[in-house]
Image (cartoon, rainbow, N blue to C red; front, top):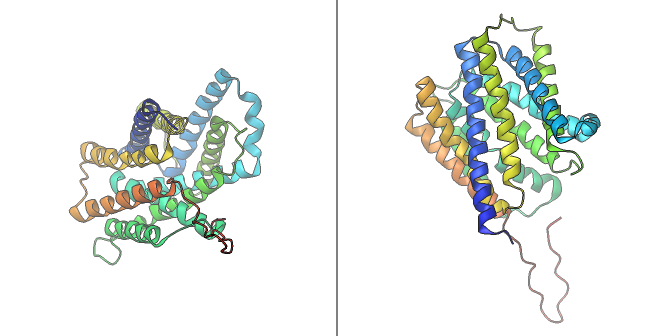
Length: 307
């Protein structure tokens, strides 16, 4: 049992973490569109700053010895999947509003549950399939395939969501002996490496103090977002806490309108609502305790379909 005080704390932490993630997207778009930096340069510089900040935090927490786990197979696969997804997402942000891009990526929890069904044989009733279909319909309303306003770049957040699904699937299989900061550090290193590799294809620009401060803000909000969301789930009920991750969509809409004057149209708002509703239902249903089917006296054993 989780007491109400712990759950309230977890809800506030999740709301804060989601807000920082939305802030990170805003900093990224300011750098990409306002300062005109290519995604590879921003990824490289932000990865370097984040890595230095994380090293400092790990030294303070006495976790530097755990850095050897950065090269573990699962940790590296998770880091590369997240870094690649982030790079693709940054490319989309240069064109899309942060509200639309962030909302599309929120189908990740839906895809993660679907992946658990296909790969692990987890129970998945028709209600969950319906929720997944509704979530994908919401994505379609946002990216508008076939419409005159459709931009192929809008497909990129969908690819990001697929990579984040892989990330989440692997995260659950990383041993608890690996600290969260070490996992985040691995992602920062991979992001920096991808950015440096992209320098061969994109022209980098000189950095001024204003741009560096924006990238620093992005690095700090990214670390804070990760830290708060991880802390939100500790000692709390996931079924209560997880739905509040969709606060990121509300924050993204607000920041997109205030900072960039990009207000989503009614069709996109409807798509966001469908994604959020489907995601909340799936997350809560996934954490609902399941009861074994009743047994009849003298009847054969009923085998559960769960893995």
